[in-house]
Length: 370
Image 1 (cartoon, rainbow, N blue to C red):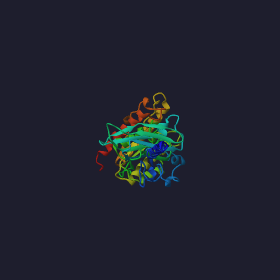
Image 2 (image 1 turned 120 degrees about the horizontal axis):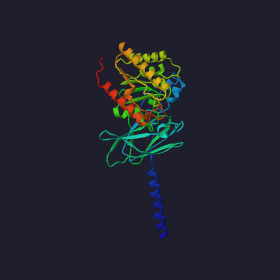
Image 3 (image 1 turned 90 degrees about the horizontal axis):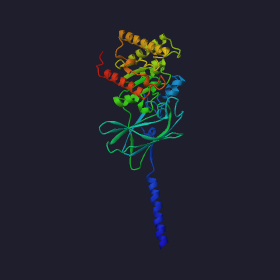
C-alpha cells in the first residue's frame, strides 16, 4: 500500500513538472507571417527586412543594393499584455564596426507606449552570438504599456526574427500607417552612424517625436543623389522629401561642382514635377569636428554648403515652390558631437533630430499654396 501511495505521488509530481514545462514554454510569432504588412519604414511592402524591393536590384549600383539589405529605420509595432517579451534573430554581417558598437550595428530597441501616449524605452538583456537574443521585462507599477515598437539594427541584415511571449497572453502585430511618410535620402549619417542603439539615430527620433512615418534611405558612403533613387522615391507619395546627401558629394567621389549642381537640380525638378504640392528640404553638410585644425576638411564642407546655398537661391528665383533649406548652423554640431570626426555621437544625433524637428514643424505648419 505504501509503495502504491509513493508511486501515485511520484506520478503526480512528474505530471506536474511536465505540465509546468509545457505551459511555461515561450510562444513565438514571426512578423513576416502576420498576413499583412507590419514592417514600417520603407516605401514598398514585401516580406524581407530590406529597404528596397527586388525590382530595384538591377537599377541601382551593387553598393546601394547591398546597403539596402541593412534594416536602418525599419520598425515593427505590436500590442501585448505579456509581462515578458523576447526577441531572437540572426544577422548576416559583422556584429560591430571599429567606430560603432554591436548595440547600434546589430542590436534592437524596444519602446512601450502608455495610455497617456508617452513612449518609454525598455532596457533589454541581450546576448550577441550566432543567434542574438533580447529579453525585456515590461511590467511596470507606474505605467500600463499598451503598444510596443521594435526598432531594427542600423548596419546589419536581419534574418529569422521571432518575437516571444509567455503562454496565457497574446501578441498582435499592428499594420503599418497609411499616411504618407517623411522620406529621407541621405548618407551614413542618415542611415544611423554612429548611434549606440537604433532608436537614437536621428531618423528614429523623428519618428517618435513627430509621430509620423519616416522612411530611411540613408546609404553609407553612397548617398549620391542618383537618378535611380530619385525616380524610385518620386513614384511614391510623401509628406516631405528630404535630400541630405552633401556629406557624400565630396572630393574622391569623382563628381565636379557642375555634376553636383546638375544632380541637385535634377532631383528637385523631378520630385517637383511628380509631386507639385509636396515640400522638399535640402540639407547642408553639418561639418567635421576637426574643421578648425584641418583646413582642407573645413574647405570641403564650406564649399559644398556655399554651392548648395547658391543653387537653393537659384531654384527659388526660378520659381521652384515649396523648397526649403536646413543650414549647418541650425544643426549646430560641435567637436564633442562626433565619434571619428565625421559621424555624430548620440548627442550629435539628438542635435540633428532637434534641428530637423523644428524645421519640419515650420514647414508643415504653413499653408502650401505658394
